[in-house]
Length: 270
Ligand code: PEP
Ligand code: MN
Image (tube, rainbow, N blue to C red; front, side, top):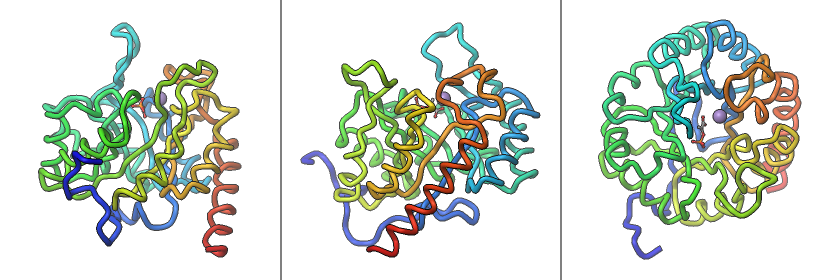
């Protein structure tokens, strides 16, 4: 890791990122919610369901970085207002993506955590802008990026004065087509070895398949991750985006039970 300087490197204390009363990096954090905010009803009902199942924070995109310009791009400000209502309704802090550096300031009024998506991992002006914001940043790994490139992007944020970066492994592109991406779980212990920053896993975008999410959520716990972020919707069949990788609330509740059991087992056996 020759190009890395000091900001992200391991050097004693682990960073714990406070998000309202949730402390990411302490215990195991579960973030859940729809891929995309589509309506008030869908978002609030999903938020209530994931809270009951044990989620600590709500995810949901109001700005969607879609591969096709013709696909639904998200509700923008209207979506952020819906997330704000969902927070009032459930108390769950909001994790939502920002895709443009010009939007960081005002999106920060609605987001408790600013998500930088895989496609924007190396958008350096966006990284600098979130580095100047007061909000924690969830930095997803670029689908074609090495661990070193990813950590260098975290450095961009930290160097602007924002110490609250959460890394998120969401799978990388390989020749394998059965899964949407290949979940590089080795990045979890590697990041722990290299950096003080917390790391969570996104098994939804990593696999693209509901059937694989339970196993990989548990594998994330076993690998030492600080949390998971998963897509859940009251009605995945009707989701406008990523329905095939979106859990129902009862599938999610089942995974949370197993995660908690495994996490407890690991804590006692350490
Ligand atoms: C998302 O979490 O909504 C998303 C678009 O994920 P990624 O940036 O990892 O593709
Ligand atoms: Mn998605």
